[in-house]
Image (cartoon, rainbow over all chains, first blue to last red; front, side, top):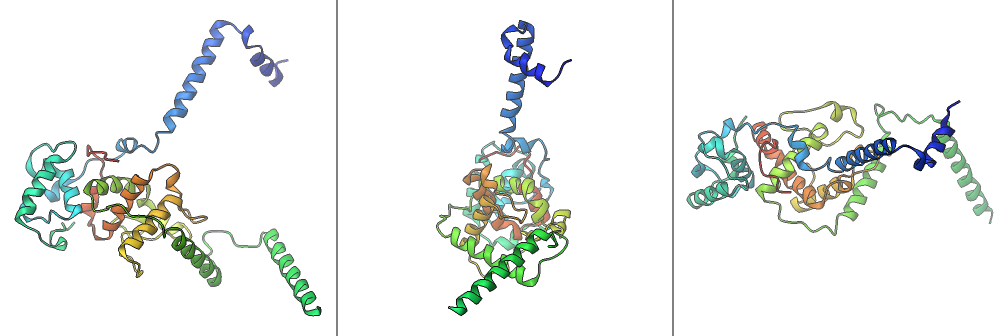
Length: 120
Length: 178
């Protein structure tokens, strides 16, 4: 007869179990710990990145930055996302290229936000 | 002395009746049966008073930062849009099925709260959640910076078109500032 009591006895007699069984047990424990550790990163923004697509910058194509309100944070954020599409250049990872262009354009113009919202 | 006795007995009777009602299971607990008007008013007042008291001391950071908008937008899309909607969408399974129904955050606020008060309130609600409403306490798993980024995005959300929303919320290969 092999019941739950036997399992308890086996666990308490850990030293008696063969080296191979001990290793399997340790690997299993390590694997479970790894799973637990991975779950703590579930709310890392990078986790979500796998699930969503690229920004659709078609509405920003051909838009002249000089005609935009560069003080508007929404416009600045959109520029950061759509640098490549707007100018055929690769935007830098930290968005510094975008910022440079914003400053350049904002020196030229400052128009009300509502005029520069892109319709659907 | 007699009056005290009568009041005491009356209070006991009321307590027993309430306890019997709770125990009986007769209360319609389903989310598809709305509260009585008085219950609704009571809960709403309780909620608003509690939030007003709790969010008073919160200090606002600068929220007009494009990197905050990008971080907050992506988080909003992942965590909030299914209940609080996105531009061009008027309802979802969650917005229809939840009770109380979650507010449509793409709509302009109809309250007379100032922009700063509204931001404080939003921060507090996102961080602490609201009991028995379906609103989780995101503060248990998200730090304050990330929650403020969501608040920054919420401030702009009612003015965004669908196209703008898509650009701001797609994570793509954009920088992850938070």
